[in-house]
Image 1 (cartoon, one colour):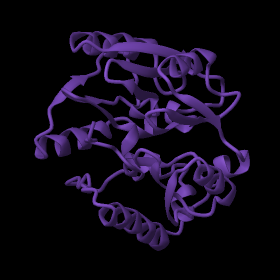
Image 2 (cartoon, helix red, strand yellow):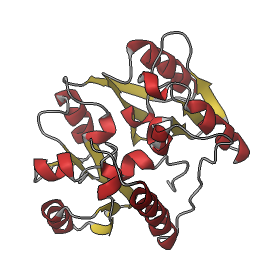
Image 3 (cartoon, helix red, strand yellow):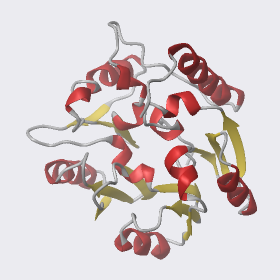
Image 4 (tube, rainbow, N blue to C red):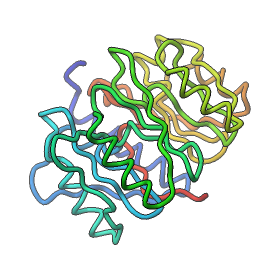
Length: 249
């Protein structure tokens, strides 16, 4: 979106990692053995976890093609199995898949994830007893993660006019109350919806989004904040920067 200040972006990235550590979360860096491509910082796009191991992404963006190999090596170093690598013409990015419950995944089809990937992921998840609900995106929506975030087992926040009705139905059928962002400007420019849920009603979000933070706190959500304005210039927020390996059930 703009050219970030390199030193400040590095400082903010280090501060994000330290914020996680301060909250008791283990942080791993990708640590490539060659000069990394700049978009490698957005780890959430490059893999997606299941209870049986990771499904490697296959980025649709040509400038990101091949980044998944750095993730594969790092996962192997950490002893985490790779459950699936996509083949053929399939493209998939991890930010398009979200768990609704232990037996159901919401998978977005659009700019970054195509039908071929959905078929392959469906086959793999079917082997471990997991069903997929596929939803389409309107033009202009990049990832499912960018329009839907979970706050607790019974509460989500989403972007109106972007999330398909089928997804809203699936959420409500499973007991979720669906809330909507209070300020579109903060969501667009401030990364307000691009947060990471640390636990039920407990999140880490970008600083500088007072309307969204006040709204979330009114829902009983504890909001930890970290400055991210320089990294947001690279068109990604905390959720994009964070590839989640393991959560407590």
